[in-house]
Length: 128
Ligand SMILES: Nc1ncnc2c1ncn2[C@@H]1O[C@H](COP(=O)(O)OP(=O)(O)OP(=O)(O)O)[C@@H](O)[C@H]1O
Image (cartoon, rainbow, N blue to C red):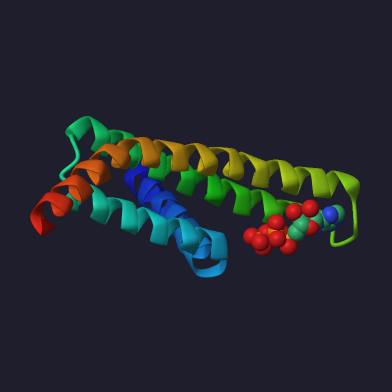
């Protein structure tokens, strides 16, 4: 049955997400950051377009972290000895996460900065 195979593969994929959340410290850091960003976006009532950019960014960071974890496991499966290629594979995968995590900080700052500016300006007026 085709749908049964589909449900099984979704189940395995969800297990992959569970493994990343349970065993990867960096994944938990990304999740905490994502929750903070989502709460801030709701509080500041960012525009629909900004919501989309934030959600895409969060999705890419989390997906990259899951792929990075998969590569780490695949490398560990091949060897537990010191191998220059194993190092390169792991460092390259980690580099991919780092590049996009850095970009996502810039995206977050450029979206929230105008809202923070208005917020602090208004609270200064309120205290005068
Ligand atoms: N078999 C290996 N041969 C050579 N260098 C390795 C090997 N395994 C890991 N390394 C190096 O050590 C670093 C740390 O490896 P480790 O397996 O602890 O993963 P990690 O990058 O610390 O991931 P995490 O922090 O998510 O556990 C790697 O980034 C890589 O530079």
